Amino acid sequence: MGSRRLLVLALAWLAVQPASALAVELPSLTVFAAADLTFAFREIAPRFERATGARVTLVFGSTGNFAHQIRQGGPADVFFAADQAFVDALIAEGALLRETRTLYAQGRIVLATARVFGPKLTELRGLLDPSVQHVAIANPLHAPYGRAAEQALRHAGLWDTLRAKLVFGENIRHTLQIVQTGAAEAGIVALSVADVPEIDWVRIDAAAHAPLDQAAAVVRRSPRPELGLAFIQFVNGAEGRPIMKRFGFMLPGEF
Image (cartoon, rainbow, N blue to C red; front, side, top):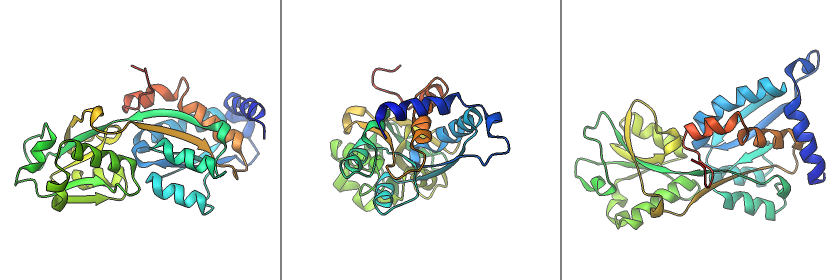
């Protein structure tokens, strides 16, 4: 399908009113989304459903695992990655549609402290305190936010010293839960999921890790590529951007 025709169809989807779907089976869309998008997309998806009459199934997890599943035929229509490199690799392999590739955010990481633990940590060196016995990060092998956490710890000269304390979450949402429950006294999580009552947090300098440029694209084998592109455009559009910004997902140059 040509990129121009796909764009026209996507815009048409965004103009559809739910009433047009009466007495007709609603179109469905399965979105594989990085776990840092959990809170934002749970607000955005219902708005998209109301605007288009489509049904959206959100599946959250680690970017690396999703990339593997898409290669193996996983049932996704659109893929929102926490690292654009995974999208670019899948485009090169022919699994995603190049013309739909869209940058939707630059992620940030924060140092989180469980409130049940005690004093809020304000710098990474605070993780050296003997009272901090466990430090949660997402698994760097397949989670971009885990890789950013490793880079930040290496930048601070702490990686080797803290290795024995590290607890690895399957994805950034799981990592947050480890800190929320007090199973780890502290951790490094995404800014987008940090505003929960069980933790205190402070931003980590963005210069301490490679940019977390996050991109999305439509899966080539999707039977409804125009609907997938419409969802990507909705996230970056007038309704989606304010929600994304509220959860700390900023585009380059956006304030």
